[in-house]
Amino acid sequence: MPHQPTDVPDRSLDGDPPSRVWLTAVLRPAGTLAGAFADAIAQSIDELSTTADMVVVDLEAAQIPDAEAVVDLIRPSAARLASVGKCLLLLHLPEALVDAVQVAGVPAAALPSDVDPGWTLPRPRRPALSPR
Figure 1 (cartoon, rainbow, N blue to C red):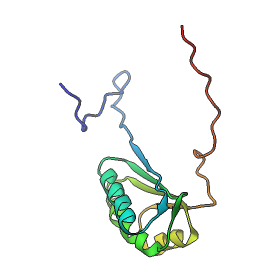
Figure 2 (figure 1 turned 45 degrees about the horizontal axis):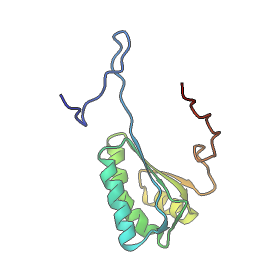
Figure 3 (figure 1 turned 135 degrees about the vertical axis):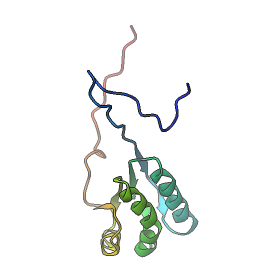
């Protein structure tokens, strides 16, 4: 039988209940978040919110000319994720956007640009696998 997206693998040991899988999707838009580009990013977040448990949007390389417009675009997806116990995580936001998200009550975790979540730090290189 072919794998179906709704299948959850049984990862139990010794009769323990199966564990739930987790999917995180990361978007890193670069450019001015306005107009058609902002609409495309909002649509991507919306589509990912139907399947991912967490959608991370890293705005480090994005310019935000209108914080309130961005809030209006992300609000429906954030609400969809939060309504089923999932999360929208916004990283590297300018202060104006952090404030706009909080004032509007958008159910998302918003971290300003001066906060590093930790996984964006350089990681040590792993040694290459040697052929046997």
